[in-house]
Image (cartoon, rainbow over all chains, first blue to last red; front, side, top):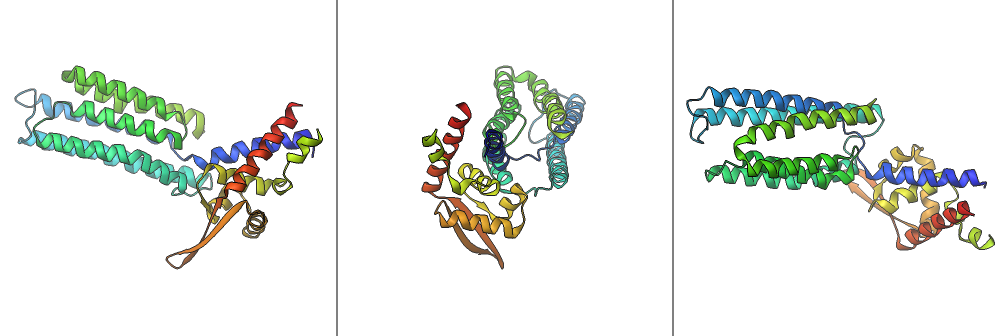
Length: 201
Length: 97
């Protein structure tokens, strides 16, 4: 074997290690769309609260129910879009969507996310909902940092940004709405675009 | 020079065997279908190269059933990991000289 052959071997080894341990079908476009859904959802939420008699909402009121429905719609639309576009990307690359790296990614993502979700629901039922926006950002950020080693696109940094936004949001909870829109709306659009430019085209 | 070449492992002297080992040292295990997809090889090709590595005791093969479908799971043995590390180190050394 010549030197070139050995060089090729090394490249091949690195390539295989990388390819086999990361989820590559993450779709940038779905990130952009999730950001847009979040901004629309935020606008709807803002409308619900601002047409309300007071500028805060109690858990027993109808407006609160609308906000929960609004949030659930944003989350569902984002997840469905993400799965659908990732499935398309996987098919295009001739890979299956549900492989072992996808399983690892899902587990790393879901453990902090579901823990956070349950925690937030518990706090809401105890009438502590002032920090809901901050908690959503923090747990989402932790989930991203945790999952980043199993996927592409330096998702880790998006995670750090979400955590910082969440912490700042906890200091000034009156602007929770603004931070939530930046974290889930603007940041998703920026990061989705970066992944799209770098990996999707 | 002779010493370095001595560490280059003949068992890994093939693209597919190299690929199988690369995947198995960074993953706890991989099944037949995953390996096939990653390496882009045919069933027979993968099976024969996996067999060769199994004979050297570099990888372990576990056959089981998921429902009615047979499932073959591969993992690297301790010796396999060690041998592969040595092999990669030897290549790197060779390229530096």
